[in-house]
Image (cartoon, rainbow, N blue to C red; front, side):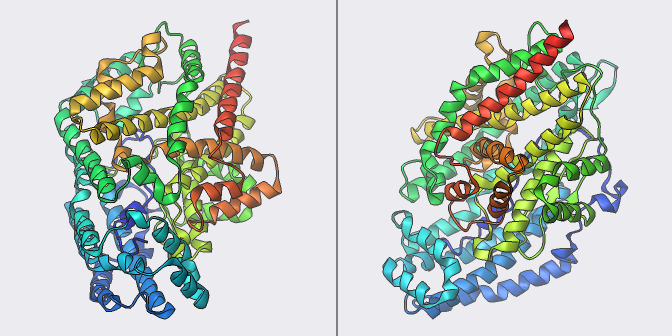
Length: 627
């Protein structure tokens, strides 16, 4: 059951990266405390973190006393698993603290060093504990099942034990598992190098805007400019930004190649048929779900091209370019919301979720669960870290006063509520939900926000802006993430076939797929050659086969949210049970209980219908304004 694999502690941080916007960065000390994380609920000081680390170090050798005892009795098995639970619980808190401290200033190598210290410590420990799975598997399932029936306290470990026996053919011998554990010290290097280089050390180009202003083109500044109304500035920024990435094409190619080769190593070592199967099989997700998503989205590209054509019409352009797709589509409508205004809007939008849900969101806002504004060196994007079982989740934002930032706040609060209710309801071994369902709660909140906002708007121009922003979610979450998923699948297939993976081959493939999605050859949207480097800026490619779950979760959340917003109390009860389910069942089954079956095409078809309804409404308003 991979009981002692502590690499999970990093994966459990649930980094749900969103688009970063360009709020003018300040020094951290200039930001009011109420907009910063309070991490003292994890550890009051770094000294207390170090003491907790020393305490857990003193216990790690205890694992050896369990060797040769696990299948002798229910009591012995329980003691070993309870020991694992306690070590895992503390290890996760240790990882969470240093990871979040590092994210507040990625230039500070002190926390990077502390994280590396943890990685090496628990990689070594995992090697010592490599006997666990093979030893349990020396018994037959009937013996283990008998232990569980004999000792009720083992029931919380049933799913993990069932998974171990279900994946028995992919488990290795004790010496082999020890080698796999030691490999953990190096298999994360590509991701770590990527994070450090892209966030802290890659030089940023300078550009001169149309007004004569000289700007250093950081990621935040680029996101701000590409969303501006000035087309010339957008093109200047886009060309400079991606050409700067191209200067490091070889370096980025080697980093991503290293990550893909890690995945190849793992699937072959564990006797899977592919990297995709190795990623999906442990959670009982058929590879057909992944393949069908790509197939269905490709079939629905005409709907996506309709969206792009509407965008071109609204912007009054003869030719829509890729550098235009984040720009405002309605003149003189610049939706701005301070963070305090955003929190009030989100609280109103979430009222259909009931008092307990809303009151918990208020706690998150008022009790410093959220680090709000960008500061120098801070991790880009946004995420919710729900890994502290004994405390509460934390949200990282880079808030920029734009409507997209309001949506990001609602999105990350969805993750936070999912983690909060799962941790509150489930025992530790069953609390962590799988990534397949991770994006349902977040995109569900975006649906609620959209429906609340659009219901308050009377002005046609503002309504058009909000409707297009919602369509942008379909673009960004359904089509764009599936585009990424297709690219990720293709590069793994290339590696599995022995084909070279270089910066050039990544760029060639990325441009080919992007041209198809955006209709470059059909004259729908012009994709400039420099866009071929965009793959290098996608951190999710360092989280194996993660991005497709944004798309599948989005389709699930559309179906679930419609039922809840209709006032269906049973639907709300089922959804709250979903939020509280953690990892108590397999993801597909958890969603079925909530009311959506992801093995069918129904959720996808409903999402396509919903998208076209929004486009119908936009064209109706546009036609009315034309008269």
